[in-house]
Image (cartoon, rainbow, N blue to C red; front, side):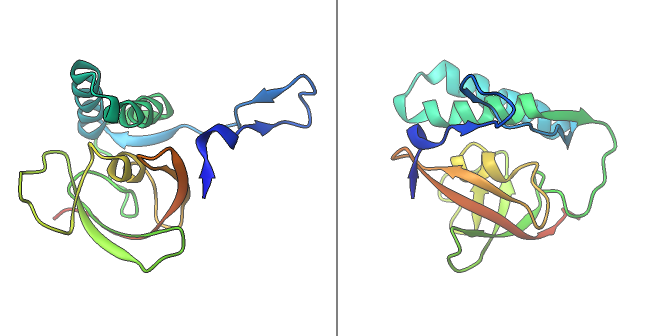
Length: 150
């Protein structure tokens, strides 16, 4: 595991110090993008220390995605889809990604308003991304399969 403080990257073309990696803009359905903004507002309104990392991930996801109307991509992780994923090469898991998780929803439900859910939304099958953990460590998550909502 890597700590978030040790994750700066350097560009060989930029000899003057650290920089962010070149990132592509991703797409999300308009409804999912709007829900991400609502989740971020809730995080910022709560001001609970545990929500700082989640707010960071949500803010980054909102900045790096473009809302698109009538988007239908079968391998895109969106709200309501069933996603099979793997965290740091462990055993694969499958869960239902939801924007509104109910108390006592049970296993297999991944709230978008969680570090895992906020990382998964917008990813596509075959992609891997860093996964921030509540203790500040960084793992990786890979999307193995996506089953879109009916």
